[in-house]
Length: 346
Ligand SMILES: NC(=O)c1ccc[n+]([C@@H]2O[C@H](COP(=O)([O-])OP(=O)(O)OC[C@H]3O[C@@H](n4cnc5c(N)ncnc54)[C@H](O)[C@@H]3O)[C@@H](O)[C@H]2O)c1
Image 1 (cartoon, rainbow, N blue to C red):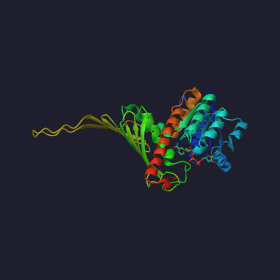
Image 2 (image 1 turned 45 degrees about the horizontal axis):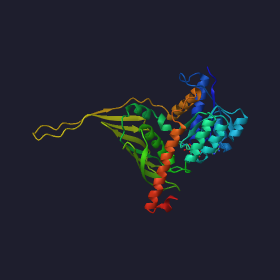
Image 3 (image 1 turned 180 degrees about the horizontal axis):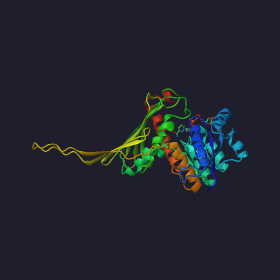
Image 4 (image 1 turned 135 degrees about the vertical axis):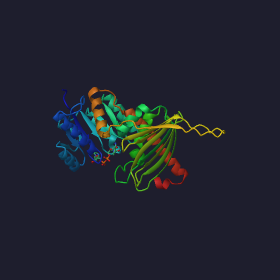
């Protein structure tokens, strides 16, 4: 058996603690020899957080060591691969330090706060020949995976991602916080470029846009309507799309997919007293094996670390999603100016 991959988590806050838990589970499975066939072994060598109490707490939970910085981790032997789950505005600097230290990196979404920062990360990963993946988690949702073989030519998307307000991720707006998940999924489902962006967004409970409604048009004519809110009274994560003869509905949270296929359309009723011809619609539910998307994402990353192949969600994918998200932010600002809401969105 090859040596376990030595992993660490950088930023063990609200989401990084989940990375720590998954690595810790894989570490225990490695020791017990119960990892799924073909999965690389893992050793969780440390938790890095500039909040030393936080690092100590999460490290103690998973019986590993706590470090205040990447430099400290390096002084104690370093790691082979790390998850970076610090706030987005720090992604570039932390990724730079990790890549220069020779670590492969799984960087939480969004890849960075600006395209310049994203490009710097892309250049650094190439320069240091590191494996680098972006944490677009929904790609690993089993409902999304079960949908991929069904895709023919999606022409119309209706997407809702609503969550309750909490004091988290307030360094970015709802577009970079939540909508970017769906942007990445649509970009992976539709061939071609986004050619038009229309958007409205408003701050409600924070200083940044908390709710947004967006219409994207692709070069091939596909339209996507997206709504994202982090100030909702309910939790909804649904993506529905139409393609020729088919309607597909994904519930990300329930991890299920519902498909309606039209085998024969309704016929015009002839004027001869005959019965109208009903459409022939076949509902179906592709089998979905429930699994934790974060575990699948991390396993996929570890596989890429082992094989040195391009990860399923590459830095270029992360950059594309970020570029569309930034276009949406621009469209929201332009709309706010037109509607004289600019004082509200600053
Ligand atoms: N994939 C998802 O579904 C998902 C969900 C939530 C958050 N995220 C992403 O995860 C990242 C973190 O979000 P969060 O909500 O966990 O933030 P958070 O503020 O709860 O946690 C960030 C942690 O990073 C630490 N930190 C900050 N700068 C650091 C540095 N230079 N070195 C080491 N540690 C540092 C902080 O002390 C804190 O503990 C963001 O990029 C966010 O977009 C992804």
